[in-house]
Amino acid sequence: MGVQHPRKYTPEFKRQAVALAQELGSAPKAAERLGVPESNIHNWREKLKSGGSLSGASADAAGKNVNAESPEEELKRLRRENQQLQKANYILKQAAAFFSQDHLK
Image (cartoon, rainbow, N blue to C red):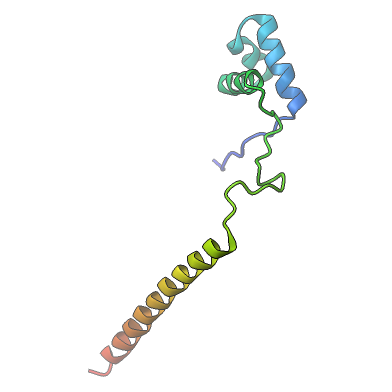
């Protein structure tokens, strides 16, 4: 069996699914009719109640990076990462030298 990818639903479909669940008085019945997981309908209903968006787009996708680092923080992070990579390269070079000498014995 292959990997299943999550289905994409339009915001309009989500609204209609929630409306159908309200009309039927049952999320499971609406989910069965529409062929979607019941949990999706519950999640969509909660998002609508809280005034959230049903578009499914994250803040990053909208061009707003919520967890943006300041340039100074990014520079510190990159310097730490660079130092770790340099240590790893040094260890790998030492190991390669050690194992290349092993065949000379």
